[in-house]
Amino acid sequence: MKLEDVPFEETAPPPVPVPGLAAFRAGGAERKAFFRYHLSDRFFGLLQFAGFHALSVLPPKAAAAIGAPMGRLVARLDWNRPYVEFMRRGIIRIRPELKGDREGQDRVLRAWFRNAGIVHAQFACTHSLVTPERLTVHNREIVEEAKATGKPVFIVLVHLGNWEAVGVGMRAVKLGEGFGIYEPQPNRYQNRLIYRLRKRHNLYAFPPTRKLPVLLGKLACEGGVNAALFLDEVRDGQSTFPYFGRPVQASSNMRFVLKLAARAEARLVPCHFVREGVDRNSIRALAHLPPPPPRATTEEMEETARALSAIFEPAVREHLEQWYMLKDMRLPPQD
Image 1: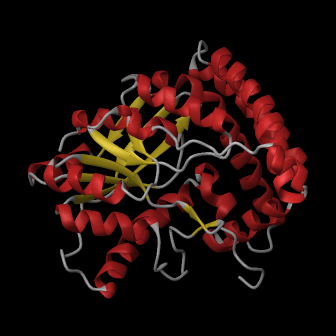
Image 2: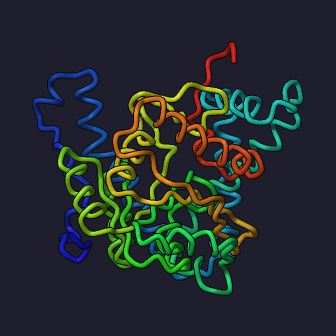
């Protein structure tokens, strides 16, 4: 099966159930869901649509000039919220030299919020971020070696830099057609924006469904289709990859990716996509790994997972302010 055999509508986010008057009458969480669906989601959805169309006509540098102060404003408003304390714990785990250095932690946090603001502002002009003059490809030969095996190539990544530009940017390494997976956002209007942007660029990213493993198996195993897949998804409220000394999770996106790679005999190419200026980005291939054996044991799966983590940990440490999932690391206080 090839991607052109799959209707693009298969990538649409699943419909959100509509809370009726019964939910309003029920009170509590159901009433909150009623107001969120009918009022707050529509209000913020309208703001997002207006902002998206206003920013889409700007060059990336101008969008960054708007996004950076917005990120600083969010930092000021959220500075004492619990998730920022979780981020501090993550900073100390990843960069232990900053333990006890409150000012050093603050610098990373401020840079993180600034980067998050830029990423969100540049979402509307993603197409302008991956032009030849704004995108540099490092270690292209690693990708070529993987392609030369004649097997599918799975580009695996973490949320560094501007992750929404990754799909378009992958074309810079001449991989041809490919698929991805995404987690729908809570706001249905934001999902529609993301869907329309991906449709404009013909980027196949599928939401998780029960039939997804079968579909991706047909694409990768039967069609030899390549993929760009993120490993640091949020599950049960936290991101567990890269590990930084934490245990390998029994159920995770990593496990799914490795099983699919094993079935398709796909080559694994860890890459990172980072910002090298407000309107400059780079893709860097980090390694070329074989997939786990087709009938890999749990130990063999964990060995490959830890090898991937060991490759990504230095990249995340070096560009910590650009790692979006820092906010979801959620370490306990004793760590």
